[in-house]
Image (cartoon, rainbow, N blue to C red; front, side, top):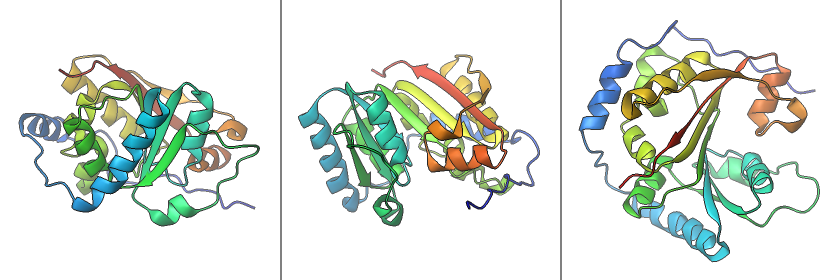
Length: 226
């Protein structure tokens, strides 16, 4: 029997008071972290495989065991899905998949920040981009570890496409939506995400639903950058 998942606990009870300040500073300062040489091979492998296959690009950021990558590939058969995760252990774990796997996907082990930087430099813009249940880093002092509080966030937005984020911590989604609005000027609504655990996109989504968590979602269509 699966162990129930504990709800997110935090010493932060509302929106982070310095969220807007961090988002503004990161938008004004170009992110110049040196690219890691080890990130080049998985990036080139993923992009070459996509280009050989053809189709629009979908990014499954932080794909974990890759179940969501496979499900997205099945859901969008005319696209190609790249699942990216930094953990070799997660990527090597066996996923439960019935029938033949779709052929329009690849999973790669890579640092997401490095991968996003390389996408921006190569002017690669996905059709869709998913941030499914990222680590919430719930302590108040951990704002800059959340994607919307990280210096890479403006680069991520410049990639364009339909960006969707889901979490079982409402504060994370509320902050994400506010940061998106701050940088784009577009209203980004948040909503409760209702899903049947039998068709959950990720193992975490399934576990959270069966554990009685309320799930949250926000999404935006980002215009392609110049």
